[in-house]
Amino acid sequence: MKNRLKILRAERDWTQAQLAIEVEVSRQTINAIEKGKFDPSLPLAFKIARLFEMSIEDIFQDDLSS
Amino acid sequence: MDKSNKELGGWQAKQVRDTFRLGYWTAAWLVTMAAAKFGPELVWQSNELISSLAILINLGVGFGMILANKRCLEGMDEMQQKINLEAMGLTLGVGLVVGLGYSGMNVNNLISFDDEILLLTILMSVTYILGIFAGHWKYR
Image (cartoon, rainbow over all chains, first blue to last red; front, top):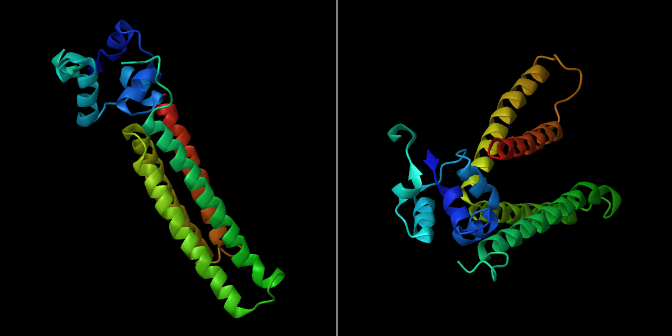
């Protein structure tokens, strides 16, 4: 699964640690999600989407759909 | 997001507290286990009542440690839980396969020394630690 998390975070000038605190995960988890090594659960994806005030599809994209 | 005023998040602070709590329970369990094992010989001269009490206390503290571990796991985020699940699965598999193989070798007198539960415990501990490291490496 691809995602735009790193870009969206950079646009807001947030660090991985700050984002991690906001969505209540570790900084390592944010790093793994950004690198596409770990796919977040649906509740975590919703939490991230709410924080960025976007829909899940605007942040996460299925590999097959691209 | 008010990033300037954010300190260690509540979730992360709770995780640190849970980890310390698990550490205290583990230390207490080790102390009570040492007391139950070495006390009869070195302290209370094989008094059965005290030995039984020491074992009961060790079991009680052991269950406390299990609950603290459960709480610690529940407090982790989903990737940390996945890393732990994979490490525990590996540990269970290695412990079962190697432990039963080791026991089989002992039954068939293929090894000259008695099978010790301590060796299995060490093997499982080392496997779990390696599993955790491997998980962090995989998702780094």
